[in-house]
Image (cartoon, rainbow, N blue to C red):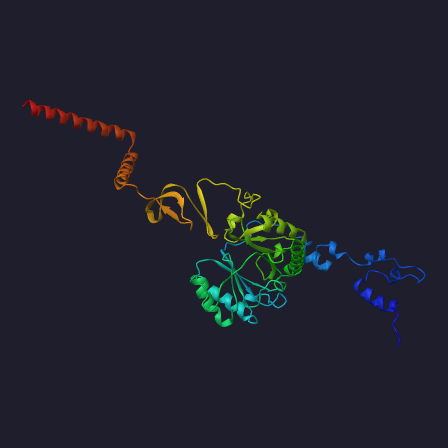
Length: 406
């Protein structure tokens, strides 16, 4: 049996992968010893390049593309208050418009039901598809809901309408499923290549980098990373959303753009570990309006708390927005006056001021009306009124004296 000469076998293989290298430079006469120190020069150092596997793709669609860092990221997230993720197949299987593809009935049915019932769903909800990768514990048909931090298993095509009715419209547990509580932090990286190649090039590289850094830090069971479908803003790729508990225990969903593999350690060590927002990459967050997201003077303290101060009492309403008020009287809806103090119930509702004594309340109301009445007069009107009152009083006294003398 003839054995092919190693040189004849290696030359075509090397030419296939490294066409720019001449075979004459690879092999010297056998009298010349081959040093292992020469080998690294033949193989690109991919570990040192936090880029995609294909340099040409990276120049046009990856982390070196010209549009990187050309836009202001803050305020590029549309306002919404709930994010729902459906586990369904993998990015390689997703159509460009997976939520409306006839080839993907479950995502299409769920997206259609959300659209049909949008007027009945009081909390603005966003739907995204994600892949249940090995090690995440997720499988097709599972639904994750943030900020509620719950999971439902086994959603089927025939269950969609009932699921939307129970969970999203009526705010009750699903009749055919048991809600499970999620734990840890969850990172969703857009890797929807069929929708936009920029996400297809950047997403997988970021996911791989997250995996390496998570394993290095021993966070395998605490931080879960999953590929997801289009979330908006292709030009900001790499795009990702991080759901993690804040200093107060509430779940927040923060969006980041222009993320490169070099940024992954900072996201783990600063955002997830300490609750500090990475401002230069921050696009916005779940529960905040676009205008709120554009406020660049909001910074985070090391504890993750907001360093921006405001006058008056300020309270957040269970992750879906903010309610602001001050102690005293305010003008209510339809012109109805209401008096409230500056205290709040734990559920965020403003407590009504209790009247200590009914007589005191009526007395205060009378003073308020009298003060308001006089407040509308000019100074000359006040003097005229005083003169009239004085004259009436003089006549009354004179008349009283006249009757007594008579």
